Amino acid sequence: MHFSTVFLTGFVAIAGVSAAKFPITNAVTKNTAENKMKSKLLSKARPLARKLDEGDDAADEDLVIDLTNYSIVFEKCQFVKFYNVGEDNGDEEGDVLSTNKFVIFKLCNSNNCSSGCKSDYAEYVVDMETYVAALIEMKQESVENTCNTCQENCQVDDDTPNYSVKCQSCMDRCDRYDALEENGYGDASQYTACAAVGNDDDADAYYTGAYCSDDGAQISIGVFADAYCSDSVSTQDAATVLGLAAFSNHILSATYSSECISCQQEVEDGDDDADDYEPETAETCQNLYDAAGKCETPTGFSGGYLSYYSSQASNEEDVCTFISSLDSGTYDQTGDIVIGEGGVKTISGKSNTATSAQSLFLAVLILSTMGLAGYAAMLHDEISGGKSDGLSGKECLGTYG
Image 1 (cartoon, helix red, strand yellow):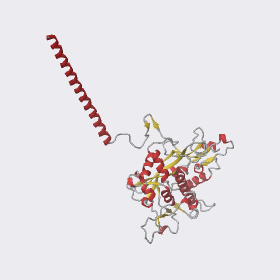
Image 2 (image 1 turned 135 degrees about the vertical axis):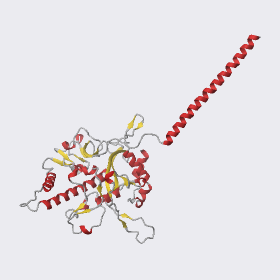
Image 3 (image 1 turned 45 degrees about the vertical axis):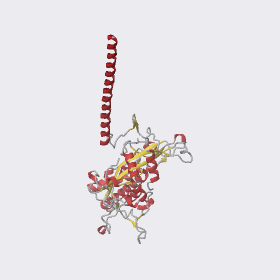
Image 4 (image 1 turned 120 degrees about the vertical axis):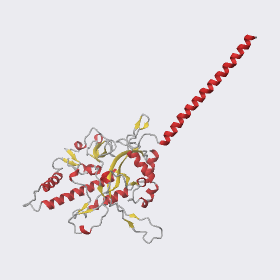
């Protein structure tokens, strides 16, 4: 799903298993390579045609997006309510506001990503469903690779297991993950799509799906009163509603992890082609880049391909403005605009201090007002003094006469 320029322009106009135990990687194994591209997200992939001059013999050549030197960094998720009137003047319930869900992420140079991503980076915005699906798939594959490797290295056969401390640790983790459902726990990553809980009584029906925390730093599973998962029911616990003891965020945590997730595709050490391997961009990064709205020019990003997306390139300023509005605290957790006593209230992000030009204008205005006030006082004194002299002269003449 490509980021819609029309949609963006319209907006501007109206403006416990620990995840660290299974690090997120892009490893490819023989067990997963054949099925890797069967997910919902990657089925949306489409080649990016090179932008070449007319008459070029290679005009039909496809461009390979090379992001092997960069890493994905999650920045924030945000709900936003839009005025959206269709043929029915709103949705079936007559609501003219629709809730859209976004994720802001960065591509950072892998060499300085862990130190704060302060140079050679760019910001992107994509719908939350696409981002969550991509990172969940990546983490699931990573867990599968880790457990397969653990099994191969630590369990030669049933009669002669390797019970070293390292192997016992990884085997225990994998066994606990496999036994989640058996122990009454639910994998939170399986409940990100908005879906009815299964209540036959429509009046009391609940829906579960992914939502953003108040500060946008985390994605969790919540309970909602509507089929679009926009009207949150904060008094209900999603795991309880689903009949689970609790959720495991082991996989879902990858969607809001602060880790730098490399876009370089890795290969298994034992792969026959590992020695001759040339770096390739992970499919997850390619598809997220292709689907996202891009803001690359302001930060001097050197690894982007914005010029090959003619529509987005011409509207990059709007994309950057859109990202800024999402990141500045303009909206609350439900997507409503935050209003303070004096109007829209900025919670975080951009500073509320005046610029130098504004300060200068204010100073000139104050000095000019003071000067005019002094001049008015002087004129008042002169006029008052002249009238007093005239009255005094007439009184004298009258007395003399």
